[in-house]
Length: 166
Image (cartoon, rainbow, N blue to C red):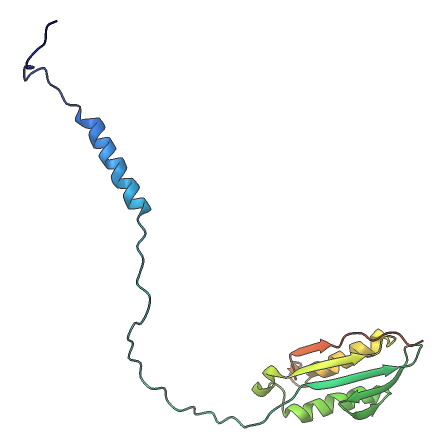
């Protein structure tokens, strides 16, 4: 068996292109998988003290408003209530409801009414027409001159339905 002791220099050829390809692929792999995480925690910010509030808010605590619609077995409205106050059962009762709500909130678009909520508690038999009138009167009114809607309260919800009268 014959062994060569050394190779001549001109015969030894190292392929550089595949090694460079592998090196570049490894670099791209590490760069794409690198996740730079910004440190979170105390940032030591020195902010100026805020200026005093120029708008003085009145300490008016507007509570939620309850509107009740009571009807007989046939669905005819017998009583329209605002809280514990009876407003009647005719068409003028809905106008009185609108005026009473305006009196409670002060003026249309009052920013204090942002959190006020009206709850409409209608009997199961109440006709849809009466509920729709109460809903529109609680929402606001249409101003005659600019023909725009003056909103009173944005949040209106319905109480859970009661069982029908036997």
